[in-house]
Length: 155
Image 1: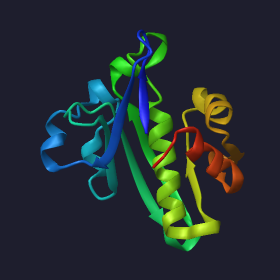
Image 2: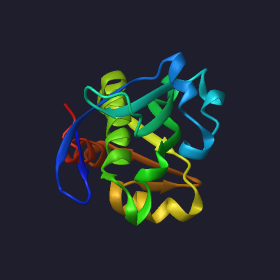
Image 3: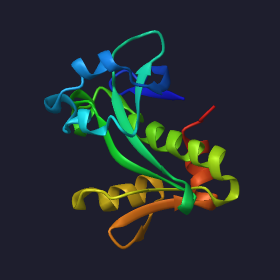
């Protein structure tokens, strides 16, 4: 998995790993939009450039075994990586692809990921990540899930 520095085009290898207790000191609401301490009872992962400690984005997932699905509870990129002036691209896509591969590992052919997006992001998720609508939720499964994982070159 890689991210791209928007201004230079340089690529960086990234890793997605579980956060640790000390990470909560640097995960502020002003930088990541949410109070991530509320997610401690779920699985929370961070994305960072390999061999660095800077957290570029976060994802909180809930594994719903009875539905063969992983729900993305929260997804955020750091403030400097949002919008037209972001420093790096592909952070959110890598996190979503990560959730997808975790779902495939758990559920095989039945794998599915879902999330409930902010209204203004619905079309973005549908266009950028091939997600489909199901009521208030968006989901991804089957061929589209595999395509997303391939797009972000998940290892």
